[in-house]
Image (cartoon, rainbow, N blue to C red; front, side, top):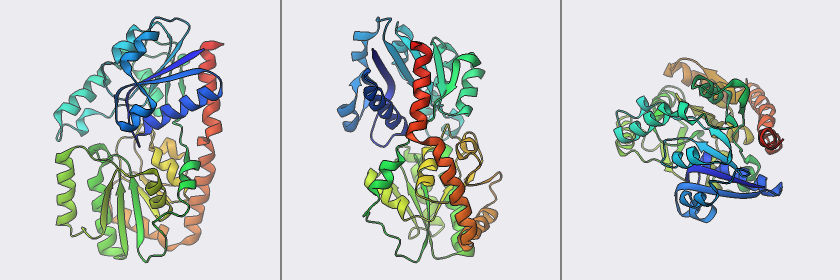
Length: 355
């Protein structure tokens, strides 16, 4: 049996792209004939996915299965709508456009359109969100509850932990290192991350640093962040690495002391799972799917009071027994996102169509 996957883009380091490829590998181990098609592809994407136009060869086959990944408006929505394959619709959430309006009205327009037409994409046998938060958005858009499921994102954290061995960033240092991993976009509220760190470094622990890892592509937002770092005198303490290799990401995780998130919109948040795998205490603003992904692990706050956040960071740093208790809870939660667990959910999803 053939199972095709169709997505907006396929690029190195992207969570949805990694999810698609893990599904592809799993399908092949189950002896399905599997192909991946994408609307846009970077050099890495060209090595693992076909252009979406080539999917048309299979579009009229009623025996094939199409898994369609929806994360932003893209013209290949029309391929999904025309397809006569049996369909699985996977919703990765679309960031509300209000976050992007002050910085890029073009992106904001695509996000708005993408959210508006979700109701028109309910033409599948089954649909899944990669969190309960996303599944509820599908139901709110008209998808029937009984045909919706949750399929968590595949997170191959074992591979990442393995890559950390012998990494270039070691723990033989004096500073307390805070980390954030994610795209440098407005909904992640990187400015709040920097302000919270400013309080912590200035008023509590001058021997501290902040490492922010992730691709940036909105120039106006990047300029705002650079201005903020410079105006607060943090240029020696705040490091924006941009996109990094898996090896460097792993070594950064391995050498970090705390993961801090101020994000206000997440459909899942893969770095939370990766931080659990590296035994890093997590301190996160409770919004959208963050609480669900943590599942009672980590430490959450509901108001962005920077002095309070700074004091919470210091309590976690100062009390090893508390730190170990947080890490222990995260290790327990990590089991929920094992590859075996996610594969079992994928199998269930496919079997609802194949019987």
